[in-house]
Amino acid sequence: MTILLTGGAGYIGSHVLLCCLEAGHAVVVLDDFSNGSPEALTRVQGLADGQVTTWHGDIRDAALLERIFARHPIEAVLHFAGLKAVGESVANPLAYYDVNVGGSVTLARAMAAAGVFRLVFSSTAAVYGDQAQMPLTETSALGQPSSPYGCSKLMVEQVLADLCAADPRWSVGVLRYFNPAGAHPSGRIGEDPRGVPANLIPYAMQVAVGRRPELAVFGNDYPTPDGTGMRDYIHVMDLALGHLAAMEHLADHTGHHIWNLGTGRGHSVLEVIRGMERVINRPLPWKLAPRRPGDTAQCWADPARAATDLGWRATRGLDEMLADHWRWQAQNPEGYQS
Ligand code: NAD
Ligand code: UDP
Image (cartoon, rainbow, N blue to C red):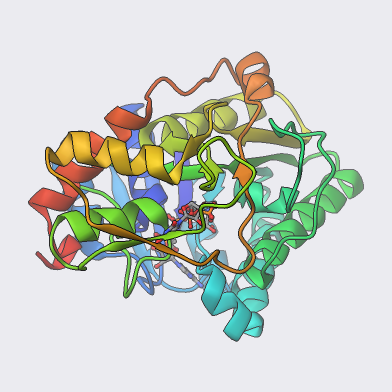
């Protein structure tokens, strides 16, 4: 079938694109390349056969969306396009509400006008806010996200829930990602952050490749076994396959569905550093730094609902994630500019 993938040139979207092609789907990509690369699309097409049509444009452009839906027999939409930098969202909240919330509303309106009601949305574990009780289930109380970015994702979840309540034709899957990392094992596609990486693993990779002198560990006085923050890192290929499973499930399940996509296991910052050192086979320079404002001590998923409903579970662990991420980084030290 034909799938519209918004943000398909980005980190997660490009891996999902590859999985869609491998599953035999035709894919229409809509991306404004503000944080994605046309090179990612070229490389995906070097890894898999199949039909990709690319539209360079903005998800907020209603006329463009109308043209795309008129031109292609789209049956489902996987919606990745959006802004994702937490710090930038604090400095420029309007851009985040405009692109993430406004863009999603424009997309949903265009879908309904075209008679397309199957949507998978990229949300985040940040909607749970700061919780003491782990693991997080989809029924855990929602917290106050610590940034406009997190708030924008929570708002879209609510918009989509309201839409499903108002119109029974909708089938919506909200996927709450934990911490995506890793890359396709070919090393041809991967995460290519613009500017200084905000996340642990991409930052550590740039230290390992010599682009940055050392990693700062943000606090070692959290109530965790070694005092550093714990997260549920999930391999981007596992995450990508979760999207296909959700999309298939939605074909015969209407309504609003939420699934955690995580492994169910937390790893501390120091465990990630030790894993990196095993992969690069040398010490990784790091120093202790103060806590980062807004950080939570720990966050990991209960992924049982996705296993039961979708038959999906993450199969790749931290070492494989770091090895695959490192292969991409080592082969492409400057990302797609290399
Ligand atoms: P990314 O920035 O690599 O990909 C997003 C893509 O959307 C980029 O190619 C960008 O050019 C495109 N885009 C941005 N604004 C657009 C617009 N207005 N119109 C059209 N295209 C636009 O990000 P990613 O890491 O691949 O994340 C994908 C989605 O998953 C995002 O919605 C993000 O918020 C969400 N998410 C990501 C993470 C993570 O850690 N990477 C975690 C939770 C949720
Ligand atoms: N972290 C760190 N140094 C960095 C980036 C992150 O010590 O340069 C820590 C951070 O405090 C958290 C964990 O690594 O405990 C994961 O952070 P990341 O930003 O990757 O994910 P998020 O906090 O958004 O879940």
